[in-house]
Image (cartoon, rainbow, N blue to C red):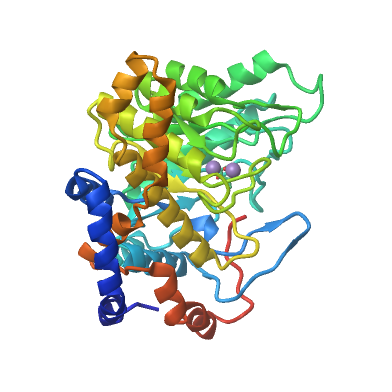
Length: 424
Ligand code: RM4
Ligand code: MN
Ligand code: MN
């Protein structure tokens, strides 16, 4: 299913007058709106291939129909999102949930939708039908060398597939850990994991990055072998210049100060990328910005400040990705909402008066510092985000247009009601 540009144009025409009024007001409130709009146009957020179907919990799954049945259809779905918002110009594949058969055909399809291939993700948290050894007791940490080798080989295979697609990074997330005290020798598990990662790292092409994602719990509930940013940092520091920590917002203990983690990782030149989502308790994988928009803004505030301090390119120098799961919403609508929330938080962070904030910090003017941040957070920047979309040929209101065009019904008519996408 394709969205014709004429449909986007007539949608935009209908909303133009009210959009322009809002934009004029926003421009009167915020300095340098032009440069903010340009940065918003350049900023792209990769969509995970495993979030295009309905997610579920261990209690149940309630699919909504029209889910992508193949990698081709997943690419088409991300193409739909990108046509609507022009901010989702990449897809991130999870192997072996997605294995391309014809690389050239897949690449051509992706470029027809103006999509790039973002990080490839390995999977050593599930056993595959044809695999010899089980990951029940871990993969890269396993006490059994043959299991470790199998997991290492899988990661190297994923790198090869990524090379064929034009990806430039590998994300490693390990379910490794233990469920009970005494199950594991922590130090040996760490050493085994490090040695395994070293072998994977050695297979990276020179222009590639390795992202090591941490997670405090689940599926192991007593210990996780890459549990927090300090542990991830300790591995990636030893691995070398191409290895970085990946922050998934849902992978922290409650109330962790994620913005401080981000700031320090950036300072240490070890922040590699992001998995955006929102959560109340754990790895809830809810829509980004749905519960804690102020936290999302504070994270972006540190990102912008830290990237500018190092002269980094906001759009290219870190990996930006959503990692979410949708139990009750239409996955595509949920992803549109996540992208919008991320863009809004980014725009708010770009509008912070940094000079004034620095002065307030140097003068220990705590009240002023709070005024500056909250002023940026409470100023409505949605017209800037919409203007970025308008200028790049996307829709002023992507969710509204998605509904007006009855995209989900179209997908159900095309693919059927009882389709199931691979993924979580
Ligand atoms: C994990 C983690 C990884 C993702 C898997 C599916 O909790 O967030 O990034 O690959 O889920
Ligand atoms: Mn993740
Ligand atoms: Mn997760």
